[in-house]
Image (cartoon, rainbow, N blue to C red; front, side, top):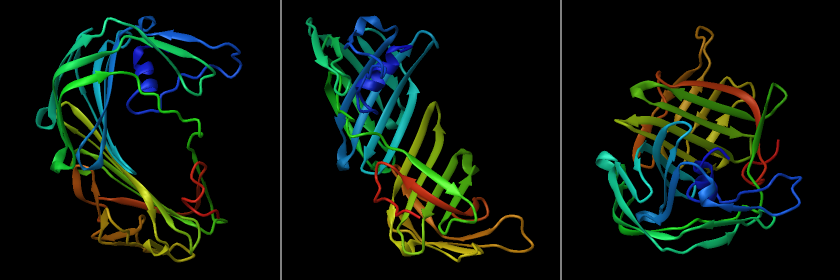
Length: 309
């Protein structure tokens, strides 16, 4: 591990908190917070409208930078923010502009606590619990979630992922009976992309979309994924035409048609998507470049997400 950032990500906020030893290791390992260079803090909170908010801040002396990350998630949607932070052994300060601010001071407990790292073969980690006091405010764009706290406990979060990881794969070629439509756009100073797969005519459609943008010094990444009924994605066997009409958080529809006189397919309609904090984002029109190919999509951890080809 190069820095406490890795430890922070493993123990709290965005990931599920396991420091796993190498497969060949036979003895358990004890980790201590003092062993890691730099600084890191992490909090897990509950925002409004059912969102979970994870906040982590770190300083990496090897890369000479300090950053704060905010992860806002609910079911299959999320928004992730990254910004500069001022971090010391006892303070966390970040100006998030219209999104809020973090101005916290640590009151340490003066004692040590050792916890076992699940799914690690008996490894343990020792740290000093404490409580941060001050002001922590976050308000998502368009009011999709918010939080305001004056006291925030510091403690590792050890949600185990013993059930296994996730993975997916896609095969493409004329031999596949399914199809995949993918779109991308770089307009308005952001990167927008989406993908919809359907493995055969009667299977459900699986979709994912993301948008990356910057607001002043803040990097923002929003994601949406899910499953739609079979009629949400229709295409002819030769992939000359296709139609998307997806349920909420989508609205509208779009059609694809191949023209002999055009290098790229024609992609028209009023299809739009509501991301967390950014609603009604257009997914169709001449500024969105699309491709349509024969494909089969499989996700290992959720076999019922999309039927096999």
